[in-house]
Length: 423
Image 1: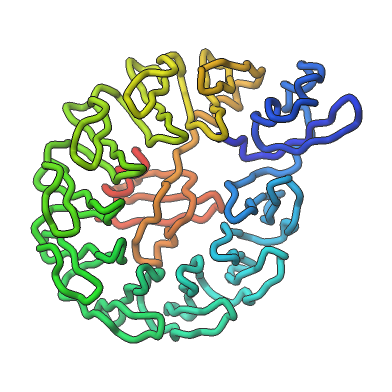
Image 2: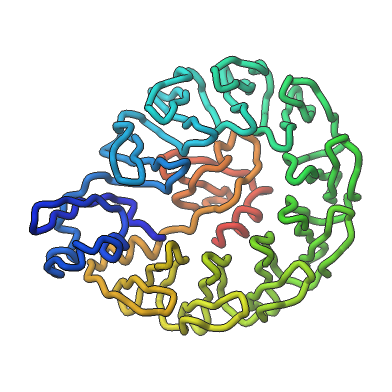
């Protein structure tokens, strides 16, 4: 569901009020359909309640009013008033907040259960959160106790019971007691995913298991985290997939490829995109100029500079006609055609909404957010954060988050970022 990132107040003729951050509310609330259409659809004349609203996480969404952040529930009720300089999604029952350049954590009642005292902090993962104090990293529990001291130069969140840390230029994997479990013999390594971790020796990549043993030899030019039992790998200029035994189950035939989601993966061949299953069968031929992951059994695809929707059999269910199209949510999707915005159902039946050209321009130009957690050194402030803008200046990649913070990434990470967000 594409949201306006703003919340508006709709005032009905009978005096009732509704708050909404997306156009879909006009279809979902019967009373609105009975109202004077000119009053309802021209919602820019209605009162703006919040300047920004994020996606829901654990029942609450981040909102911004002026320069402060707070949270609302799914009824658009303000449960935590905007008073923070920065706010982040709830994870494992707690959310990071920022006041006066210091980070802490609140619960869903808005109580500051862990004081804002850290120079940096990350979400809770497996019961522990990564924090930074005096330029060193450590871990705290949900009581705010520093169970692993802030002594590391770099660190990552816990995954599969282990966390990667760096101290005095040496890499280690530690457990939740802070005990060193693995001393990897490599130049670079990633966090564990599905019990295997990518490592790099020289210019080649492979995998180790949770005992630190080499599970898959370092022989790939690029290697990615496992997803749904398979990992994307690259040799030369071609991509393919391996299983956890290191067997090449899908040959390196593709110019570009992505992780599996729901049993399908997007691949590119001869400058066209399609979908394969885990057997490597091209279930939807590479014939599209642009494609996206399936959502509610439909995927947005682009052909001849127009967007449409296909099902998992590759059949066109809503033909190519839109200048922009977005994924389905709750059976509805927002599309743009000839500078008009519509909400369509899964049969393609439209409901037209009058709106301004500025709204269309803003919505169409929004960057599609990264949908998976990236594992880079925590100093980059990029773990699980929403990205609002991406620019490459003088061979440096700059990321701007919705909170206004800017991060610069190393050149070695640029290619992976570009592949994920398609810039």
